[in-house]
Structure formats: C-alpha cells, structure tokens
Image 1 (cartoon, rainbow, N blue to C red):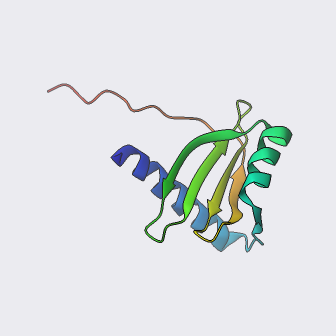
Image 2 (cartoon, helix red, strand yellow):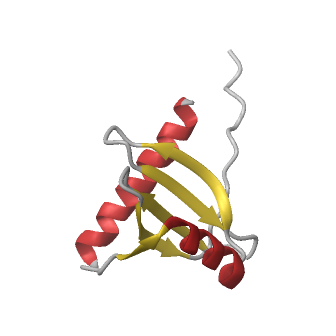
Length: 99
C-alpha cells in the first residue's frame, strides 16, 4: 500500500506543479462519461486509484500508447480531469539492495 501512496503523492505533486505553471481550467462532468470516453477515444483504462483524506477518488488512466489522464471524483460524484499527458510508463519496484 505504501508504494501506491507514493505513486499518488507523486501524481498529485506533478499536478500541482503543472497547474502553477499552466493556469488550466478543469473539465468536469459525470465519472461514467469520462471513463467511457477515455477508453473509447484514447484506449485509456484505470491503472491505479486511491482515496484522499477528504474522500475524493483519484484515478490514473493510461493507454498502451502512453497517453494518461488523472481523474478526481469528489464524494458528491463530481468528476474532473486534473491532468493529462503522454509518454506514460509504469515503473515496477526494483529488488532491494543485497546486504
């Protein structure tokens, strides 16, 4: 679970750094509409998810071609695209160093 928390923390940090540089308007709507659209238009599927301390669902969608989207869904059901990009690569944990 700690590995997943680190991934989510890194994604959120990336989002906040990107937002500070590019004052972007968040696109919001229904969760199911986003999930279906991301799959149909980009081939993106959920590759990771987690719940924030405020109860929001954070999902990382990614495709085989490398496109990715971070979707945040509030407890009230409002879903917003927080960030998107290209060149996604899933990093697997490496073996711990031998002693």
